[in-house]
Image (cartoon, rainbow, N blue to C red; front, side, top):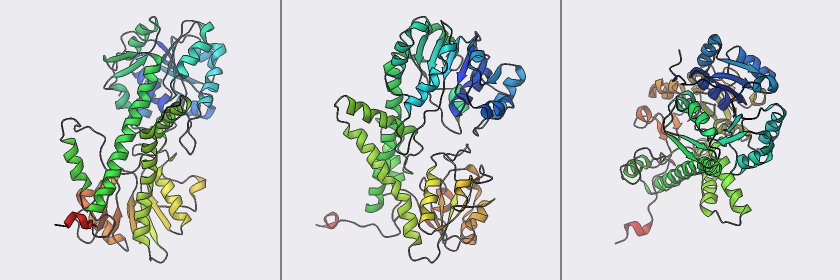
Length: 452
């Protein structure tokens, strides 16, 4: 059963857009006691949700939906008139698509919102939580000024695989609005989840989302750039990470672990927003530009290691453990693991993979990946293995599972996920981001470093 807090004053809430953000938002608001209607134009999505099946895997989500459906606190529809007839609050949770350059299709979100315009009632609070650029919410409020609405913005802070916990127990909630009438309604909606609300203007709330993701992206790329230098000079990036985090001005929670490049569009989308603001206002953004450039450069790290460990191997076979974008979800959309598989297949490498959340491949990956029902099956006969998605199941693998099943026990583990069991295991070449000699060669020291 759900352990979500109970709302002091239940509200009629409509959640528009029922992908990951919208499903979690609807489920958590309903579990807290609000009366929720989920609205989406996709009939198949609505039908599945009405049966208690979310369109994306998320721990606890299906059960939460089932509980609220049984209690009569949630319903789903494709009909905006029915969904908005009694809504005190409209939560806009549409997914914002991004292209291959991580640039957001903001007009898509606006176009979807316009389909609701004829059905909105005066006095409704419209709370935008979709990822949109600074100025979007203000422009919406201005264009809809004659409808008698109250418009606000709150940046979402969910993480795939931990979304319900993130929603139910946030560190704080950021709410942007200039409308004093909307404040008590929004506070009533959100205080069951946190009593710490950071009130600010629309623009500041939107910019807070950009700033958080840009700072996280900066931290990731700094750690990875440092890690590549560590490999070259013989330092251990994990030890350096410990040194950094023990510095009081940095701290234990800093996002400074060496590992994979960030992917999926979430962080990059906000960095692209900031780049665009700089261009539009004639401002240089060398730091933001550098974060994106450094991250793109680091994407080659994993490919370089695969190439190194398969060079000279006739008909190379590489095992890939994990295919999803993150553990705890079944989505393959924008997955770095899938991108790596495509890259290897294009270079004549046979790709054998296993993912506990992927029972079958989509049509476009059939012929690219040989999917196995177990990790052992994927490892069998492989010349190298890549730990691509950090599923807890993989921690049950012992060093012997790699050395016994593979032709060459060479393991590339960008995020050090299996380091405890494999880093010092005899007979296994263990490669991780920032690990000394991770290139397979002894560290090179500049002559000046040893000169008297």
